[in-house]
Image (cartoon, rainbow, N blue to C red; front, side, top):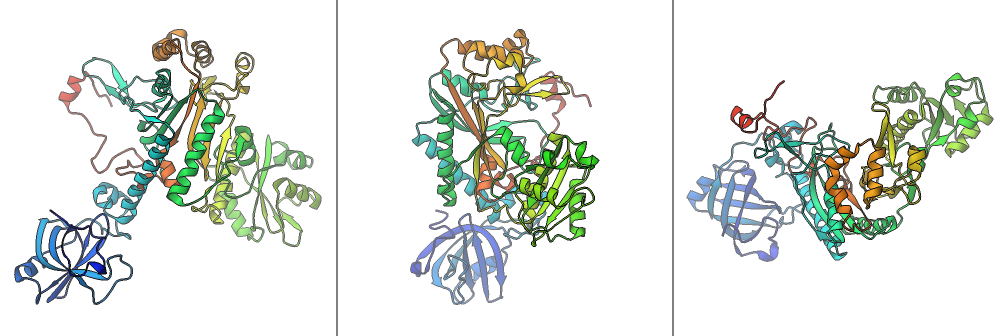
Length: 582
């Protein structure tokens, strides 16, 4: 037996017990006649004491050779500490060591294995197995496990069945590039790794399983950032014989359950807004509603004067930043430069100070009087003491720019509090979106999304006006889940492929198996997929998903620990009938 207890479990009431402990050496304090060692495992730390008067000489000699991260086993007696540590659960006791075995010596680690480490991110990514020993990372992985178990338990209690679907599938167009896998046994042919189990979960509904879920890896070959990985994890769910309301209710209940179970927070309200409302009020389809600053559109109160910038703009829109009227001119100039950065590309920013005494001071006083500025204040719901920030230009661009400014100001003002949770549903997305490059419509979600009831005929006359029977669940400004009611009959699915520009031959080649399945009695069905990585990060009060993943990739999609991706040797390439040209 390597241990009778873990390194967090012993207390003062265990005084006098003979115990066996194992773990890693966290720290050694050698006073010559006495040595203290902090012994660490996943659970915590226990202090060991080696005393030349009470510890065998051979054990003392061996203790003097210990270094950081040595793996050791000890046997000894629990005794009361003279100098107690109230910051440790085991801080009232220590182990007087009688036997010591070095199970594995260790090189000096490249960074300190402590909560506050001296290792930079690149170094810690390279030695991720060491980084996992640190509490901040270890605790995040434990937290992820707790969320996953809470999800599994909830869905199982609701009658969902966990079913695994294949990783080696057929390449299908789902919006991002596929990762492809060559087949040795089928020369010149390739598998693709799934971007989602979309068609398989629909086939499971055709198969009569009624309620399906799995926590599943998905793969997309796309540009990366802190909250995006080439491989990510979904809580994938599908239900048969449901309408939109059924799906929203079950996954609203799941989200409430997680917030209560994991964070101890009761959230009752899940507001619902349409996609069009989200874009008009917040400039994006995943608004953070923990704070206000809703957009106020100003076209009707800003275009009647000789200010050409506004008169020539498609949209004039502003937000009221609470309590920022006392910003200095220097601070406002910095804000203007912030929105003019290439990442945003705004031409400039008009501002209005709504002073605490009720007066107004703006950067366009030459063109607008106090009554005009008062009208702007009403449109943006500004109060005395607020700063009104106004952008103008093309509608889509200016909404995105103001949305970024809104989030930046909320961050600066401390309004995005990680311990507050504000969920909402965004519904009624457009079914299709126009792509200027290809000059045709693409599915906003995927080609299996059903149009809203009664709107199918619109596809022939006004495709851009058709709304999807789709929905996203947003939490604190992040899309944590999304789904739709699916098309479940061959005729409608064929029409959708037509409008998306598939020839009948292309549709048959890529999705013939699904179309055929629909002819054998497919039930009405719909579902939703949560992004587990992002959900866990938000519940854990973080913006980045990376530390909640055991072995993440960097922003270039590389695993620097195992040095992947990597070239294949010539023999492997030959066996796969592949040739690399650079």
